[in-house]
Length: 498
Image (cartoon, rainbow, N blue to C red; front, side, top):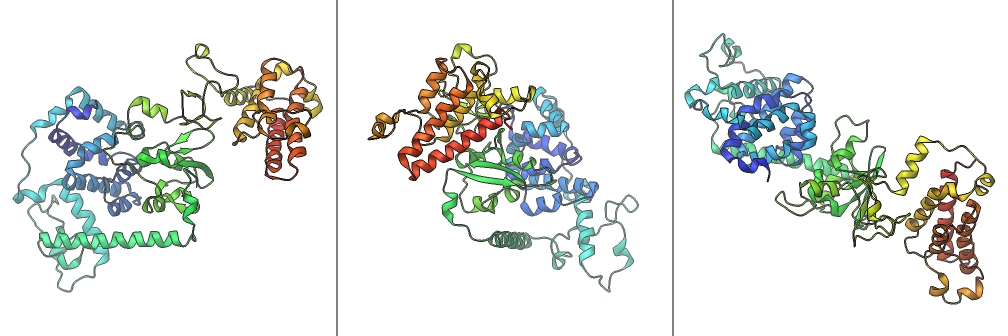
């Protein structure tokens, strides 16, 4: 059970109230603000205003305004607030939050239970939050409004919190927030509703502008978004987004690259030219932003209360997200999968080459793809001619052959060349006198029937030669040509052939 579940709502709110100033002073608060915004804990308009601030002091005031708004308007969400700011990636960035968490764990936070009573209405001018709120609004409004002829020198005096004139009051200036027409009136419930309505209209216009920008990218047929996985990019970084994994939105490891799985937030950070990127607007799929895909319900985010495995925060479930959900070779999620500790791939024990036995596994396991990659990083293979490679003894290149066979199994999606064609294709034996298939090549390799690398390569090439002779220009001939090109490319790459 999470430590926050042992604390009452009142305790969490009181602790939040006492820590607002410390949180507002955190260096580089944008990631902290992104986290709040991603979980709908901050108004979009206020968020955009604060993240654009360049002055450190103004940004501190802005962060305090956000926290103050959260306490006053969304106090029921304080438990969620602490849950999301205590995530590992946030704690690593902000040491002060680690101290807060330790305070909640060891019980030292209870020192804040004996606070003085809240300041009443008559002393309201002395509240620090009002100072900050008023100062920022006054400066903004002074730039926007024209000077009235009847303004006097008194209007230009410091506000009610200024130490030089402690008792002076300027309610008109202090209460100014949205429009000049209400600056000199006491804010009533109706006026607040009017202001909220105006803010909603402004947000609506911003959404319309975003949609207009999306429209300018050109029409995209809905069918391109129907696949279970979608190509995505952020600048020069490319990946594949798996819609099923997008259950928890920004926190879900739903985007896969060759190296690993990323959350949308992590994926954006891979594009180093973006200094203040946001996954909703900077990750694109078929020229459309992820924000567009969310609005069109192409991507679905589960409820914050969802307890499914994809939304779980349990350690084992989070660990499982680092690897694929299905076998890299056969694309099936049935049965037990063996996960590579170096890449996102997962395999059935018998699909991998060499086949893996449970008793041979150590604390960490690497697949053949990663073993070969690591080996070549450590010992860069010398350049050789194709003849030199083919004449080599196969005993020193078993790993390379297993790699090539795994590539064949992966690329042959319909398993056209995997099994014995004499048993599955009518009339095959009458045309092809020396049949060959991938399973047979694997068996010969495992039984050590090849002496040289050339014998192994010759059998693989025979598969595609037979395919061309038997099919002559049909779709299977084209498939064979494509797989032949893949094999030759990988063969020359891993043997560093000139």
